[in-house]
Image (cartoon, rainbow, N blue to C red; front, top):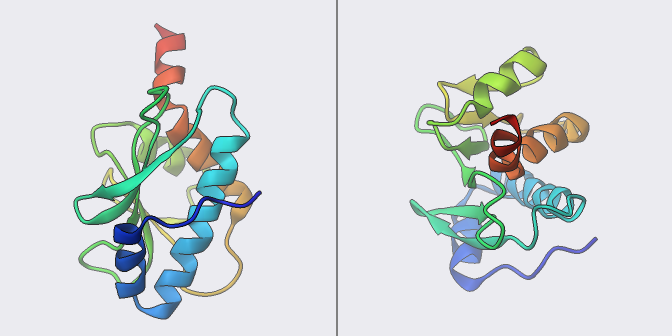
Length: 139
C-alpha cells in the first residue's frame, strides 16, 4: 500500500530531522497508514502538524487517539508520541516490556538502527488508532 504524499508543512518537519531519525520515522509513517487501512473502523487519516510534529488523526471516525512522530528532549532516538492521558503506553509496556524503551506515559522510543519491530509496532499502532472504539465497546 502506498501512503499519501507528504503535506508540505509536514515534509519540512521531516526534512529537519537528522537523516537516521528521518528514515526511521518515515518507515513508521508508512506503517501507520498501512495499519489504518487494515482497520475498516478507522477510516482515512488526517496528517497535520500538532505541537510542531507530524501527527496522524482519525478525525473522520474519531476511532483513535492522535499519534505523533518526533523525538523526546532527553534522547536522540526517534519516538512515537501518544496522548499522555491515555492508557496506551501502559498497555504497550505490559505487552512488550523489553521490546521498546518508553518515556513516562507519552512516548515509545525506537532504535536508531537495525530492523524495525514491525509486528509489535503494528499492534501498538492498532491500539492507538482504535483506542476510542475499544473504550466505547467496554462501556
